[in-house]
Length: 425
Ligand code: AMP
Image (cartoon, rainbow, N blue to C red):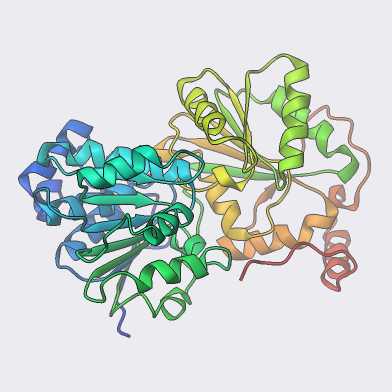
């Protein structure tokens, strides 16, 4: 499998439209799509757009990665709409790991594809089948779907993939992890063999091409910015603490931080519920909650309210970690270190979007040191440790700044006395 890699210099800042010396008109997009771009108010393509769009327009398979919030959706949506031209049969399928992300991608298709009358439809679980069936019957060009409901409808023969030309796996590392892989394989098997396949994510492991050989043909790899790195617009810090003080430090951080809107991530639904209840009782903030056990209509309300500013804090599990594009998230707080380093990059990537600045804090207790080190290895950078001034810290080795103490702790943990959760892969 031949692969070409286009890489921006490692230390280059996240791409800003001004730094890319091409215009959308240079990229070969159709007039209708250029009109859509103009309406969206974008002046220049971002790095990933400048590099991926011409390649996608040639019809080749592409693996595209660039930092969170750098315009990846438009990097595939614009050339796809251009290739589609006018309305016809169902020709494009886009797979997304979570419902809210699917909905956001659909909004972008509507925004850019309106001029050409391209019809897109959202298919996901947690809601009735009626509207989705009606949409399919009315005819659609682009389907944006989560795997479970899509398979349901495929089994009911409500979806005809015979004319499919382009398949997109967005957040591809998530789509190909163990949880999704069986469903994704079944879907890919039912797509025509002659098609174009596009993979996108901010975190693409090097082994993806071999892992996904069943779906790709001679992919062209476009990698912009530091692979797997956090966007340079995000300042991120670890806040070490004795694990017994985790909740106390979290509440203090929230209080001391001058945030406009903050996303808080927890590992478990129970932690999310507990924290939401704690923050609500304080009465200072308007809090929304989002996790897999919350009914879809309430998840939608939570996210919509967070977007409009009705809520200033959203407490969520990793269902909200990827892709969600909420402008003006000034802060992300990780209540604990995520077990998978990829999740760290995606979670903190909810802030610092589209060149805005953002801060991300991660509370770190001694038992999480191996997970924290895994994050640092993954992003290729040491994360600065910070302390909250005036917080009444109880002693933990984590607060001992001497190199010897930290090393001894890391070695002890490394020997497996305390274990963190397993990596997904
Ligand atoms: P994404 O990484 O696809 O989630 O996009 C992040 C944000 O950047 C979204 O709000 C997009 O609307 C916005 N965006 C995408 N492309 C451009 C561009 N060329 N210029 C300015 N903003 C953009």
